Length: 438
Image 1 (cartoon, rainbow, N blue to C red):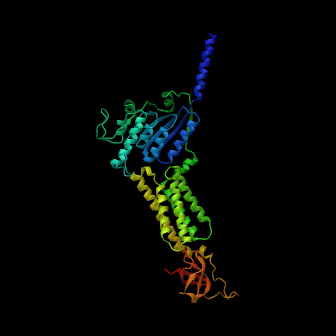
Image 2: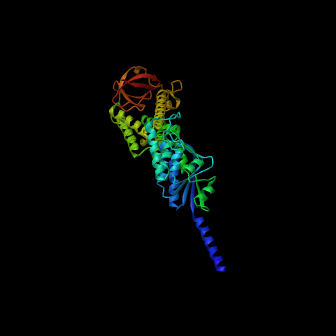
Image 3: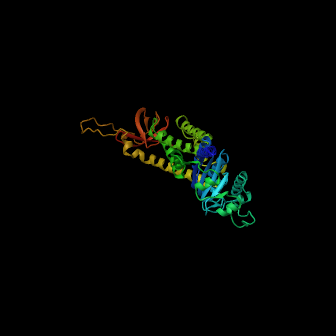
């Protein structure tokens, strides 16, 4: 009897230790489905696989979001080498439905819903058949991969799909918890995480709750359309200001840092590739060559501008989803706002900077007079209206030769190459202001 008791105690202890060895990762997918969520899901899967987890439970509560983001998440889940469980706690609508059916198992809370995955525009209106066909294919293939009914998955996208006993050809399919269980789309109904564990024989497992880290939150913040547009604008303004001023300083550092954040975020979110980054660098080099090597602004400069704009646009949109008008319009608006803001600020710099107090402090002025006991400054009024040729680059200060004499001059803020004809348009003490003769 004693031996039987010891054997029973040993088996019980072994089972307890075995249960404690089980690891289950738990991560929430809630709110709007955006591109910043995909790196988080990939990290959860990587950590679970690396640490030998028994399962991953994705607790889902979302009305949907970006199709490209949902597809990235779906691909990551389908490729996972660990049991994946979707716990639909309230709802998995639209993109959320695609993510849910990509999991090996589905548990739903009472009162939950899944479906309504048709593609709509920003106004909530159904878009053309081209987009619906793509989403139907994604839903059908994902359902097929995990042994779920493909007709129901397609019916969540297309109201013309008929599922006898469930739906006619007039409405999209959205399943309640009970309906999903009845039609084999859900594996169980569970009210909380513990019931999910019990349903899939994971009781007593060590639950590891995973939340997004600061880096992932920072990437999601930078991917916000307003923030990414500001990064583009600051980057372009910084580069322009650096080109117009001598040396390399604060403006250049800020500009390059902003663009690095923009392209880095797009690269992490699989919007940009190394190709877009190289295109941008080539465009920037062409503009610099045009300004510093070849006088004027011609083919190289125009080509550089086109390459820069193209690189920025391509980094705002996943080309695999170029058919999605919502994403295209969002990218176009972002880039248009960034370019318009950049031009507005640059125009303000050209107009007001030469007249500003900080700028004038950099230029020698006629502040010492004869009345104060000093020799009065030279009178340059005779040069007003005279023409000359730049001996050095004017950025915006430099040297001009007028009547075979050299004079220190300043432009109104424009950059002028050497060996270019200029005209004296203003005399302010010893400050000679010139303008390029077009």
